Length: 282
Image (cartoon, rainbow, N blue to C red; front, side):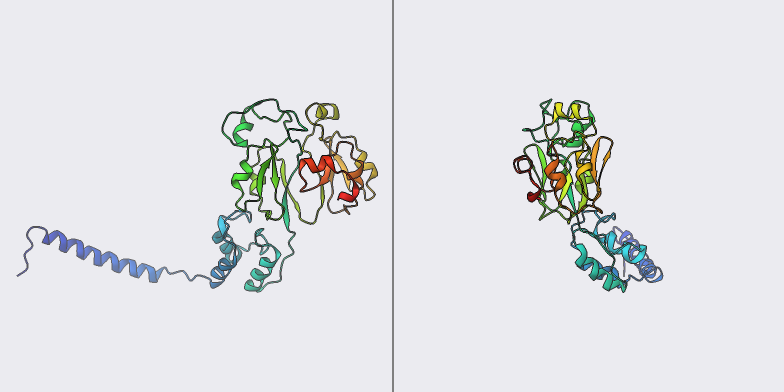
């Protein structure tokens, strides 16, 4: 005979409730089952798994679902590049989308040798923290690279390092995800096509005399580059030269003529920009 004294009764009640809830969950799993599109898992399997966010979605899982369910472009994965975009297009049964491989570029060459330092920063080793208070940045140029390595920390591909107080980008490792660009408080990092060889490596919008007070390799807004460019690919924008990459043929004329040496090979180091300055170097 079963006794309901002591713990037997509560145990029986809990067991009965467990059976009821289990049955309800089983019913709900069948009733509300959502069929998962197998293309999501197929795309997820070929994505690199970096979860860098460069595609604009919350990780590779989010991007895979966005392609299948949200109509996201198949060419948004910077880490995978064009080859991956073609594979995704094949899975989706659509025509491949044209994508331009990108890389991050530092628009500053104001290393300590060329740019004055107006402070000794002893706060948190984070560019965003140093940029909050006026005058706390070690760089005398308010437009230049702070050099505390926030971009290095957010890069998932080990493509950045700090050299001579500046961020240096390894062109072989950078996939153009844009994480460093988003993290930079000075907007001194930008994305540009991998095929582009030269860039205006300055971010200052000051006039020439003011630039020279803080940096010997900054753009002085002399407009000489705009005059000598045979393709008319350079224009002055708020005292700073800007190259139209759609028109630029990388002839190197602007590199050779720039008196401030602020136009040069995109991934050259500061010393290389200052030490070797000819059209042939491009």
